[in-house]
Image (cartoon, rainbow, N blue to C red):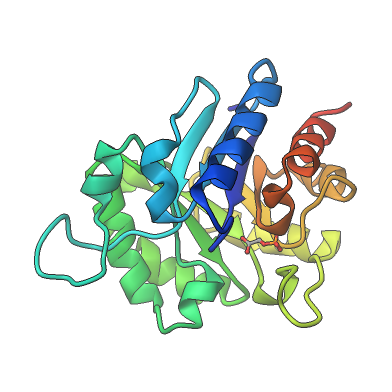
Length: 230
Ligand code: PGA
């Protein structure tokens, strides 16, 4: 599996031209680099961003039904139709708005149902959340889920947000691996940048989920290139 870099743009940038330019710069600079990148813009920018062989398009959430009377929601089926391949689910910023692990579990299933890849964020209550999320997932589907260890306090935009220590990451990965098949990919997220990326990659994650640093094309490109430096 190639190293995987997921860019969570959150509610940025402010206009579609900036979104287009950011995606274009990233795709151009990384086209010959042996990595997979997933750009996750706000829903409204998804239709204008085209995937390339190693730069995929993802979403930051999806609902658990494919269509119907659900005001304001967007379905996995719709995202699939627009060319998305990944969907971030259960981000702590969504959990703060009331999303529970039971809701995340339903979303994971709906995303798998249309053959999209769920990218599921897990905070400190690793066993509790993962057990709820994995409870009804078919065995064969479990290793299709990309789990990200992303403690809320590690997110750069949180007050006093600080990257997880490498020891903290190691312990979390151990706990997560106990609940997953060997081949399941694991990522880290939280204050990752071009300077600290190598430390995280050295702990055996397949890649990272990047927020703030993914909004600056040159910083994100540097981060990806530094991650694979030997
Ligand atoms: P950060 O965000 O890289 O700015 O800490 C990561 C995330 O929230 O997914």
